[in-house]
Every structure is written in C-alpha cells, then in structure tokens.
Image (cartoon, rainbow, N blue to C red; front, side):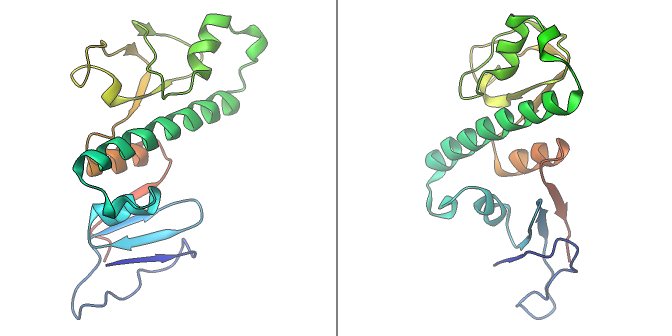
Length: 162
C-alpha cells in the first residue's frame, strides 16, 4: 500500500490496515510518500517500477542513479561558488560528464566532491573505484538506492514512519 501527499509537513496518514503503521516514508521536495515496502517507494521515483522483473528493475535503478548523479554534480558545482573560468578544462570535463558514462579517475581532488554511480566501479565492474572526495549513489538494491539518495540530501528516507 502506498499513499502520497503533497503536504511534506503532514503527519502520516492513517494506514488502511487497523492497528498497522507505515514502515517507510520518502520525503521529496514537493511530496511525502508513505509505503509498506521499499519497492513502492522506489516506484515513486521510477515509473512502472513495480511491474519490472529483477533485471529490468536493476537497469532502471542504474539509469535513475546516473541521472540523479548528473544533476547532483551540477547542483554541487553551482552552489560551490567556484568560478568555472578558474577550473582546469580536464577537471570541468570530469565534473560535467553525464554519469551514464563512467568517469575514470584515480584520485579526486577537484573543487567539489565527485558524484558517481557505485555500480560503475569495483566490485561491480572492472573499473577501479576512485579515491578522494567521492560520493556515490548506489543502485545495487532498493535500500541502497534510497539510503544513498538520502545521504546526499536528494530525498529523506524515514523508516518506522508510523
């Protein structure tokens, strides 16, 4: 069961099962969703997610993570106050590369954290994981995706929502 409200400050709506409470909630910029499962919450981010088999769901989570990492990277750069005219072109290329394409860097010491997709790097692929100030969005599972999105402040994942 899933209930979404556009009032992000609202108390949880009553669960339809008498005596039950919502185990999960996802707070976004304009909505709060209360759900019985993480699958339902991921479905608020990815259209038709509930209808996908495991392989399709994994691919969809990876695509969502890449899009979210691309946007989050742009937001970090814009909010940093860094004058891009003062940034080396090779560093800008890494920062502005859409995350559908894995970025290969050994160690990152750029002007803002680098936001990447966890499954593009070891142990999920042969590409070594970069070191330094690197933040990951992890689409390897539903909990991992929602937790890392929450850690980056893109959404807030609440458990035991009531």
